[in-house]
Image (cartoon, rainbow over all chains, first blue to last red; front, side, top):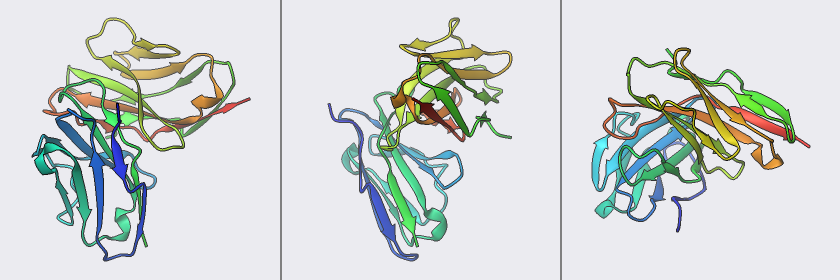
Length: 114
Length: 116
C-alpha cells in the first residue's frame, strides 16, 4: 500500500513567486493534515481536512497560504506570494479516523525562498 | 509555555546499548495522547509508539518502550539495543482531547547518533 506522498520533495523559489505543494494521502483516509517546520523551530500544525472540508485551519499563518482538497482526495497548499520566512519543511499527514493513534506522514517538501 | 519539551538537542549512544530520550509535557486536559516519531535522513516521519493518558501500562513496540510518568508529566522514549539505523531525529508529540481532530503539538526534537 502506498504511503503519503508529497511533491515536490524540494522547491527553491524567489521571494514574491508562487509555489504549490501537493499531497496524496493514503487511499481511503478521510483526514488530511498539513504541518510545517520552520528552521530552528518546532513542527507546527497548519490545517486539517475531513474529506474536502476544512475542519480546522487555525494554524494557517496568513492569507498568503491557500489549501484545497479537491474531491476529498489529494490536497494542495499554495503560497502566494512567497516570503523568506516561509522557508521550511512542509509535511502532509493522513489518518482514517480523526482520533486514530497513527498519523501517517509524508517525507515533506523542503521549501527554500531566496 | 511550551507544551512539549525535549531537553536533549543531540545525543550519542553506543551501538547495542539502551538510550532514553526525554520528553516532558504540559496540559490541563485530563485526556490526552503522547506520540513518538522518528525522522531519518530520508525525511519521512515514522510513527513509533503511542501512550494514552488513561493507559495503565507503559506502551511497548518491539525495541521501543515509553516510560510514562503521569504525575511528573514525562513520556520518555527508551530504545533498547541501539542499532546504527536508529540514528535519526526523534520527536515527541501530544494530542489533547479537546481537539476535534488529530492536531499534534510537537517538541523540538532530539537528534540521536548511534556510534559503531
